[in-house]
Image 1 (cartoon, chains in turn orange, brown):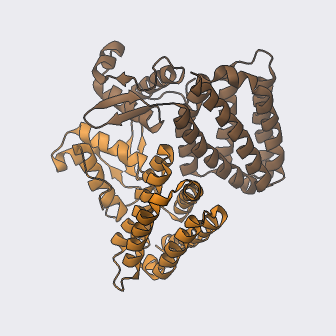
Image 2 (cartoon, rainbow over the protein chains, first blue to last red; image 1 turned 120 degrees about the vertical axis):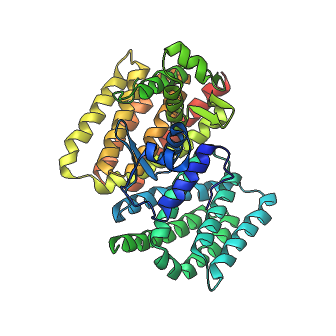
Image 3 (tube, rainbow over the protein chains, first blue to last red; image 1 turned 30 degrees about the horizontal axis):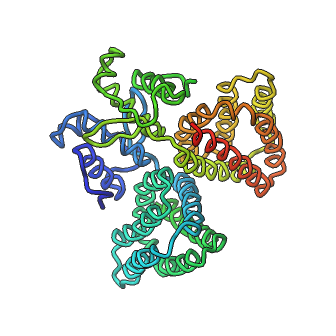
Length: 220
Length: 220
């Protein structure tokens, strides 16, 4: 579930904590004590602090000056607002991708989508693997579009969006047919450079996902 | 030019450095040495480190693990990609605002817009004051919309967008008539709850601003 090859100790701590927050082992709202964590992991407080800033950027932790850090809230309302911004960034990504992709990108785009769709069609699909595969599609698109600010904003949302998926994993599993359908139709719109259609597909799919997550969190 | 009342030492350092980067006193690409800065400002390296993370979130600094920090690049191409994402977030903000504002919000919305337009119409308009006043409009809209993720993303872009304005200040001054025109027409669309018109106004104005910034940076 790591987001990239960890480079520094702080990044390893951030990934470790991110996973625990995402799968709900650290509950929304729970305080995260710098000193306790440093002792527990046998690392310096400075490394923990650095990790907490990364988690704040990933929307998984809220840091209040002089009060400390806590796992960020994730109720149905927060999830809905989060997904709303994420959806808009994806729509922008799709619009730019429709314009910017070049003939030499076609095979790579299709390969990464095919691999994601194959995961989703597995009868015993592993949710973690499916979520990771969908993000790989997003990341491949980010690379092709080449807007560093958009890439950063989307990658900062990835952990919080994953967390919303994991918290509604059972419902997510039931929606896999719709997910693989979406990932099959989207590349067709992009290859046709049909911005309106690509954005309409994203909007419809994201609204569906948002409702599913909201229902899962409301009944939690 | 401070973004909020500084709470901590790290925030004060971040604001101080942000201002120097925004007005170009620290040039794009310039290395920022943690140790040198700590000595210069008579503060701890930990506080400088914390400030640099804030500046990274504000897109003003790039931190490379084990290499250190440098003022982020801002050439015509970067400015254009930056402004593109910022514009999309503003369009989302406007769409949500059109739906969510309530009768009790009307007076406050109009007051903050009027105050910005008054600044722009001053014959000897101060660019810093105009930029700040425009952001106050954006922030008032963020409060009304109440999406914490969108608010955070927009406020993180504010320093980098300001920097682009300051670097093209002379051209910005010449465009003030268009700016005040935009700020006069936008509230009409929002009050009419006309999402398409509000987004079209933002898109047209942002494309104009983007071109102006690109020209200024290309000729720099």
